[in-house]
Image 1 (tube, rainbow, N blue to C red):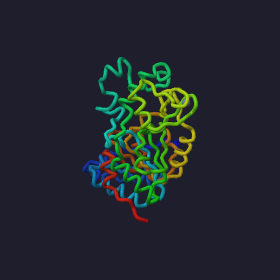
Image 2 (cartoon, helix red, strand yellow):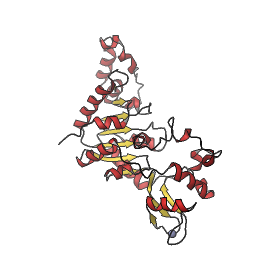
Image 3 (cartoon, rainbow, N blue to C red):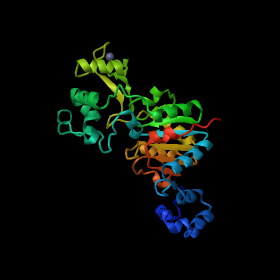
Length: 307
Ligand SMILES: [Zn+2]
């Protein structure tokens, strides 16, 4: 985006007034269109379903229109994608951060417990928290996961980039999944590298405080990215490549508050950025469509185009 010249961005809320609907602000639109700057035009005409009063159905029509023309869709998802499967959101009200559990938390925040240093210093306490709040072995893919699988089968969806560690996209059948923060389904011995699945980890944690390797007795660590650890560089590179090649990027179930995951969006050079989230996100202002809806409900109503 060219920031060399200051640009005036009208408040999209103005277009929601009766005056706007009667065409009282034609010159603003004219100025932007005559400026010939594609980005400026996109900024001044985002279709925000919640602001235009169009509601769910109009937002769905616009989304279907975008999807029907999409060749390379990439889905970027966060915790909101898994709440429909019974996995609590980390940050929203009713989520993990608002739980009161003196026995597990003590005077610590979940972020402290889920840090790399805490894991090495207090592994037993880490695993008590991990077993109770990070593992949801009975969770099943929901409507959003299932629809994304259909889209990958139809060769419209080129990749899923997720901040979730629950592995539900892979469980739904998707292959091109970039798990930025790792997965609870992968665990490996810190000494010999032996790998273990989720069912092994559950069994191990039911009988002991710290999971120990069957081969060498070393501590088995979940392959999830803890606070203070870096993300896997190959996963990041793959995710950036997919986002860079996409013509539509759908961001859903995330408020984009957590870095560095949120900065992945800057690789997007495609036509349509679609944001579907209950709350405001940092990408709303540059989106072509913003829907303040539940991603499961949206996906359930979306038709996979037949090519
Ligand atoms: Zn080992």
